[in-house]
Length: 257
Image 1 (cartoon, helix red, strand yellow):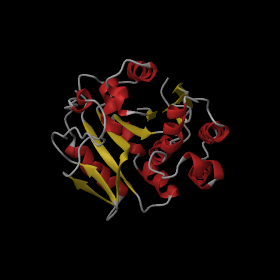
Image 2 (tube, rainbow, N blue to C red; image 1 turned 30 degrees about the vertical axis):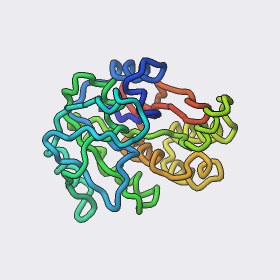
Image 3 (cartoon, rainbow, N blue to C red; image 1 turned 120 degrees about the horizontal axis):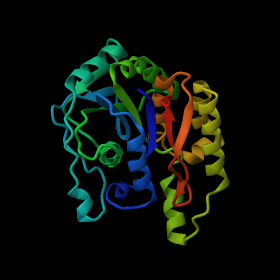
């Protein structure tokens, strides 16, 4: 299986017909159908690492202030407890545990809703250990790479540039031009991905542009899992561009045709 990372952006992309939702649907047509999906979302940020083992993971509406129609969305994909156990085993003793306390948050379902709208592909979701350094997230992605040979799609979901304060300020002002620091960081990530330099990708968070692009790191870390799992597979960018001026919506496919 290839590995994928998707810039998920606003939860409204789940229900709106816009350039991003159409791009997600097109991406779904390009990906092979997996046996299961292991989703790594920006929105399950924990102490330690956990993986959902629910038979039927609930759809979590982890946001506020949106129209009622968004809260009515359900993504009733089956879970995959066997995959959860496999992930725990691959990460090694004492690293991860299974959990029934979470489900699929909007970082996962707002994208999966377009990739496989019938919700008929099993999904487990992996949390992000907020205590781990960036390099450790790369290592864990690398430890999970063998899942690809078992038909599992490792799917990271976040945003390569994610400074909501800046994005919302641009929305209020009407100035939706992309600032230099956002374009600089997005380009630096592309360079790191194309050169398969996972050490550089991990260090980027500590650069001046990285601190501006990510006041908090959770939207960047899923990319590191994907890059770690991908090894030196060729990289392509099926979705590019910025929403609200500074929110990078870039998607990445590692491997595949």
